[in-house]
Image 1: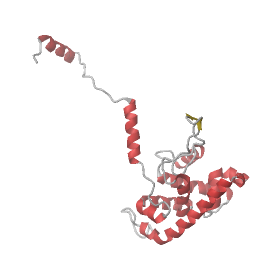
Image 2: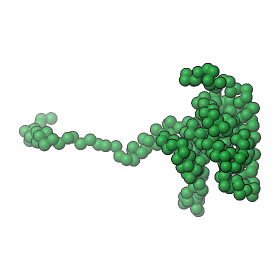
Image 3: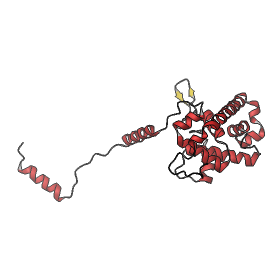
Length: 230
């Protein structure tokens, strides 16, 4: 198509005025969707065999390293940490309590702020962050979740004297809070007591399983040097 002299003059005026061609920027909605899709793509699926700790660590070897680091730092055995995660979130990093609904279709929010692998609630998570540092910590990250469980049980041991090997009482204090445990709030809650028994049974099964396979997960990373990782 022929371009007229007027077209050339208009192009010259735009160039001389310093005007830049318009660039279409992505909308905030599209950016938000991109972030959500990226997060979903990067999320870790629950282990395919959650009842066997050997299979869990075979599928996610880094989880063993995280649990071992938490044990070394805070004292809670690996099998108890993983039992907490198993029954709190079923190994789902995005787990949250189900929403409540009015009339079946009007959302009323969630019953608590519990979130992530360890189902840590906002107030106690803030306490943990204040002590351990806030930078890059996430309830949806297994390393941080296991460190949180170890930290919380360490505080429970310090305040209540519950041994860090007592899965049942540790879980009761974890679920009810240390103050609630001291007041005995769990005694009138059959569901909580049954949950504590399930956690204890899982922890014992994990302990037995781990005894026969833990050696496979030690010294299996390039940065681990024998004998320091034994």
